[in-house]
Image (cartoon, rainbow, N blue to C red; front, top):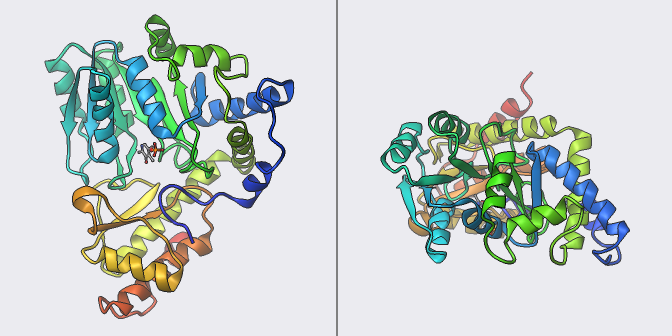
Length: 367
Ligand SMILES: *Cc1c(COP(=O)(O)O)cnc(C)c1O
């Protein structure tokens, strides 16, 4: 059972949709599929414009950094993915300042305001909605609102790779929102998507950058339901399939179920003495601080057929992360907390008494 916070399991109906003959991308047949996928994507992102790129999520991060920073970037680093925005700036010799936090600590509105007050050359801010390194939720909407009140010209770029399709994001003050195929959208890796505000499109038009990741050429082409270069046709067919299904079930229903599953999991794990790592946990995943994380994950894999993620860098062997993104069934989520409780017993950490399952069920099915 794959319960890592990306890649997530690809549902059977999506695999089936993608198993058909390869289409040529410059055909009316494919353009009709593209148009439908794009329409659904704009709805999901709640933005007036969007592009679909053939790259992993990092490609979209890079495209936003190069096309939306004109003088200086402010990057928020509370983990691996926030750090990556800085590395991208470095790779392109783009001037940037970084606000750094512990991996369990969300960015603070006042720190961001202070940073832009101290340096008037900052024209773009890059932040994760959920920083997946520690499973942390940043207060992106509050930061975006406060920044726009001070200076509406500053572009807000939100990496929503583990937030889009997880929860409803208020995009009122966000200029670009990034997502990828292999997390909440339950597709194989290989697609990234960016939603844009009208202001972001204008800024891109002023000074488009790069060749493959030139967002102006993509925006122009994709408005006409084609792509600048060969489209990732199979994945876009999958995107259309998954977004149609999510829409049919109701976006809000997916968000509510994901939130409840995340809460039920956190409560279940707390009830068996485990510590939720981030101060502000995101709904995309539950991250637990646990010194025996490596042994536990090994046991879960070997005996309970459960694959969850560990940590990176200084949190290697210190945390584990359980995915809540996508169409996770209740029986899968409850199996995860059950298996963790049993594996803790196997390792002599805590005697099994079924508490995790009980608490999960009580929370997940409360009346
Ligand atoms: C997975 C992820 C990315 C993108 O990583 P890729 O490996 O390039 O797809 C970016 N940001 C966050 C927060 C992520 O979780």
